[in-house]
Length: 243
Image 1 (cartoon, helix red, strand yellow):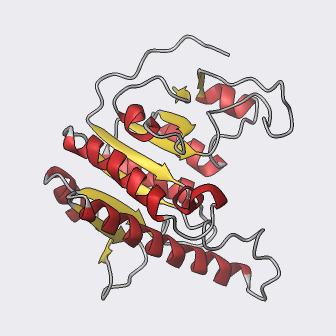
Image 2: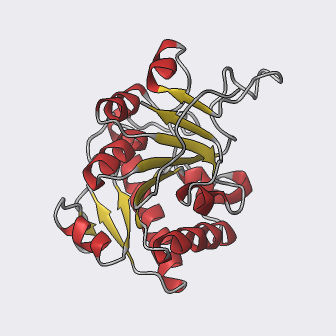
């Protein structure tokens, strides 16, 4: 399903949103060394091309409310656990990047001073200016907000040209492709269309932030080798959500 839109212009700064499940390989649980190395390699190729690169990681490969609902954990504590798991994922990605020669650093919105840097709106721009890949952890630092919302915030703070959301589906569909074999994927669509048709792109808070700040989003399948780098280099992958 195709709509008129302008192609991505020259991209200088990107913010990736990676789900925790992506780092867990085919099962989407725990950490998969091969998948970590692949993701790191593609991110490194983007940064090596001179594109300032930030990454927000989720924590669903370790803990997700629906999957762990049998645990006697309050909603507040479950959110806090999720934030901590994003820090573990961020460290794993940082180490995979550094093992390949990339400059990479973790900044967390949750203070763990003996382990990672605390998120700081000044120092993260300095890291980016110096060519480092900054991996953002801890979500927004507040419970009840998703890592999608954190990605929107960081993209805006970075003044990114685009937010690149890597998922396990090809893009945005007019209905759930897992339930409807005739679901059609959009090549592009506007924020107004997303809201009017209640399409699944990111959560409502994330969409509202990106719409307000005119931050385009590209949703694509990050599990396909080459797509992560292709998305930053202007490749026509997935669905472009524009304003």
